[in-house]
Image 1 (spheres, rainbow, N blue to C red):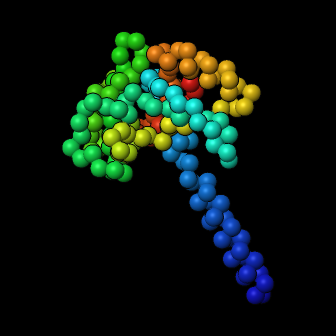
Image 2 (image 1 turned 90 degrees about the horizontal axis):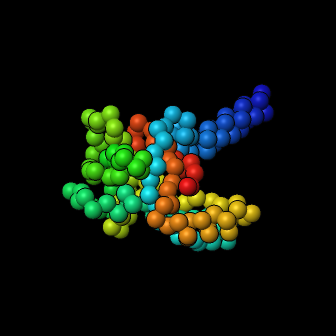
Image 3 (image 1 turned 45 degrees about the vertical axis):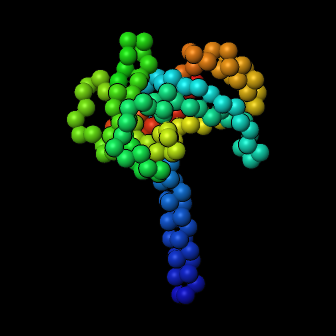
Length: 165
């Protein structure tokens, strides 16, 4: 009897741990599945991580917004309202400290956090397979002004990086 209870508790504990691990990336998966696709301007950097391999660190144009926010304190949430231009690229038009209630049909909101004097959205790193590293890096370096990121954004402002262009 005690053995059955112990086994049941062990199985339950294992289930809870697996559920927690599965829920960690849920915002990214939700954005990928149900989010709207937007194209953002980027400026890539090329670091190497010993544990992860090669990845591109991306600096988004909207991360360096010239639009002031009432409280620019490290780690505080911030909401950047973006709008699509005629060239198909989305640009920031407003920065808020709270989630906006009413957005125009041609606007979306991206949720981020203040980090130093810029905003991070959790989509700043793009891992590059070893066999494609040189090709992607060359393209990003030679076409810096045209470098774009395809991002999916859900209705809560969560974003997921889909591809680089």
